[in-house]
Amino acid sequence: MASKAAPCCRLVFCLLICAVVLRPGLGWYTVNSAYGDTIIMPCRLDVPQNLMFGKWKYENPDGSPVFIAFRSSTKKNVQYDDVPEYKDRLSLSENYTLSITNARISDEKRFVCMLVTEDDVFEAPTVVKVFKQPSKPEIVSKAPFLETEQLRQLGDCISKDSYPYGNITWYRNGRELQHREGVVNISFNKQMDPATQLYTMTSSLEYKATKADIQMPFTCSVAYYGPSGQNTVYSEQAVFDIYYPTEQVTIQVLPPKTAIKEGDNITLKCLGNGNPPPAEFLFYLPGHPEGIRSSNAYTLTDVRRNATGDYKCSLIDKRSMIASTAITVHYLDLSLNPSGEVTKQVGDALPVSCTVSSSRNASVVWMKDNTRLRSSPSFSSLRYQDAGNYVCETALQEVEGLKKRESLTLVVEGKPQIKMTKKTDPSGLSKTITCHVEGFPKPAIQWTITGTGSVINQTEESPYVNGKYSSKIIISPEENVTLTCTAENQLERTVNSLNVSASEYFISGIKKNAVDENREKVNDQAKLIVGIVVGLLLAALVAGAVYWFYVKKSKTASKHVNKDLGNLEENKKLEENNHKTEA
Ligand SMILES: *[C@@H]1O[C@H](CO)[C@@H](O)[C@H](O)[C@H]1NC(C)=O
Ligand SMILES: *[C@@H]1O[C@H](CO)[C@@H](O)[C@H](O)[C@H]1NC(C)=O
Ligand SMILES: *[C@@H]1O[C@H](CO)[C@@H](O)[C@H](O)[C@H]1NC(C)=O
Ligand SMILES: *[C@@H]1O[C@H](CO)[C@@H](O)[C@H](O)[C@H]1NC(C)=O
Ligand SMILES: *[C@@H]1O[C@H](CO)[C@@H](O)[C@H](O)[C@H]1NC(C)=O
Ligand SMILES: *[C@@H]1O[C@H](CO)[C@@H](O)[C@H](O)[C@H]1NC(C)=O
Ligand SMILES: *[C@@H]1O[C@H](CO)[C@@H](O)[C@H](O)[C@H]1NC(C)=O
Ligand SMILES: *[C@@H]1O[C@H](CO)[C@@H](O)[C@H](O)[C@H]1NC(C)=O
Ligand SMILES: *[C@@H]1O[C@H](CO)[C@@H](O)[C@H](O)[C@H]1NC(C)=O
Image (cartoon, rainbow, N blue to C red; front, side, top):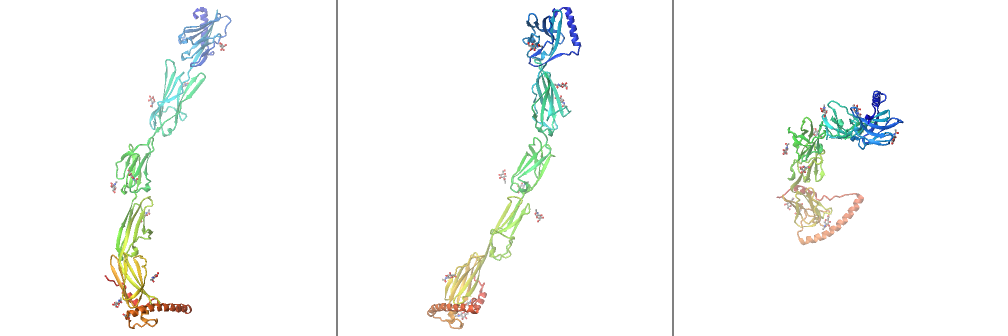
């Protein structure tokens, strides 16, 4: 339609444009629009009185115009040119404001509003800028882990559909990462979708991690221009597993080293402080210079004392990375000699030894019949009371459960030994004969009496203690009698006898003080029996009287007549006779 204008008008138009272009002070009027929004471009010209029509055109890069809308001032009608790019997107209002819906990148052009009168053409250009906010940046192609001392691809930061394209920045723990040779390598790349002309920006980060990067968040951002200026959007954080080599190997022992004893199972555990921790190690056992490859635990079962020594473990690929520990397998040996059941004769010598061999000093405790002994037993001459159950016990205090005990059951045997004693009753009527027997096993005692005399009382035996006991007999002999005590056990039979003279009573009759040793013995049995009966009765009477008198007297005069010891001569004979045995 501009072609319809007169040549003079064209010249003026041209001059006007030249004036606008050449005058930098005027500047371009710019409309900023968001992608997809409606671009609204006011005409920016005062509407002249004699206006015929208004027109909008845009200019191609080569400067050639393309007319897109027309509004007649007089007819009040609007026409849109058949430009496919703007089909159904244009709207020209009565005040010549042009609206373009659904802004595209291709709308970034110079548009010109033209108001035409009969003799003049007025033009006002407007530059359209379209902005598209990029998508929130995302870190993709993330490395599953980073390794120290290795420049590794960490990930790509990607932000899509931007116009104009934005810049991507990487951050570690909130601080911007700058390119550093060999440590940080950032490479940026942008791609334009030919259909939409929108850019997708990708920034690849290669990163050499250190242990300081453990738990450190990495982020990226995209900085872009929007209709109202510059903006920045940040990505989510990404944290990477940092792999680092083992710098130290440690070895652990189970159970605790102080308590290892023979028979235990020992587990050696090896640990490396790298990430990930090493899964396999070489274990070196004492006396085996070549390592055994195993997982991080190595178990030795039922160890013996010869397992004592230095244990080591190292990394498989770096044998200088090694840890070592000394293990002592505690042991405790106890040897009791003799032990078990031992039978010895009384008087024998018996050396006893309890020796301990141990990984530590161990003390020995002796017990006899559950009573603790002060010192270890040793017998130069066994006695019956030495018999019993001896236990030698030892323990290692440092090592729980390490205890040993051995026992010795000592039996002291002896042939029967007899010792007889006699005691005369103060009345002189009865005599007490005691047979003391010593021997083991317990001898049986038997009494025999030759001659006449009545056994008044045969008391119970005394308890058998330490191989000794005794049997007592009380007799009242009418004549000299011989008492025989026989003691017998599995080893021997021993006989001992004692001559006992007749009781004073039977010798002296009623008179108690006149003892005549030379008097003839009355042999008549009948007389004797009567004598005994009468004598017993009288003796009882006399004894009672004498006793009463004696008590009274001793109370007043303190005169004491001791007759407990009996006949001195008899006791002398008894001594001589003791220890005489018969087979
Ligand atoms: C032109 O008209 C539109 C509506 O028709 C209105 O929104 C706009 O403000 C007007 N512009 C001027 C410069 O008068
Ligand atoms: C940095 O990354 C780019 C692209 O990945 C690569 O071509 C270049 O070799 C890298 N530079 C170094 C020093 O690795
Ligand atoms: C992107 O970086 C270039 C070069 O440093 C700079 O000129 C431009 O303004 C930046 N763009 C944005 C959106 O920050
Ligand atoms: C040692 O390990 C074996 C099996 O390997 C087990 O039978 C035994 O009871 C363990 N011994 C101890 C003292 O734990
Ligand atoms: C340790 O001694 C036992 C016998 O007590 C033997 O079987 C074993 O082989 C020995 N082990 C080593 C490592 O010498
Ligand atoms: C063990 O006994 C030896 C010799 O009797 C002594 O030198 C050593 O100090 C003892 N050790 C301990 C731990 O008691
Ligand atoms: C024998 O003596 C005991 C105690 O000495 C006595 O208890 C018992 O009665 C006496 N027996 C006779 C028959 O005298
Ligand atoms: C009885 O023994 C005594 C000495 O012990 C002796 O003097 C006396 O003659 C003996 N009597 C008879 C009848 O044997
Ligand atoms: C006991 O008396 C008898 C004779 O009566 C005599 O043969 C014997 O040797 C005497 N025994 C002792 C131990 O005195």
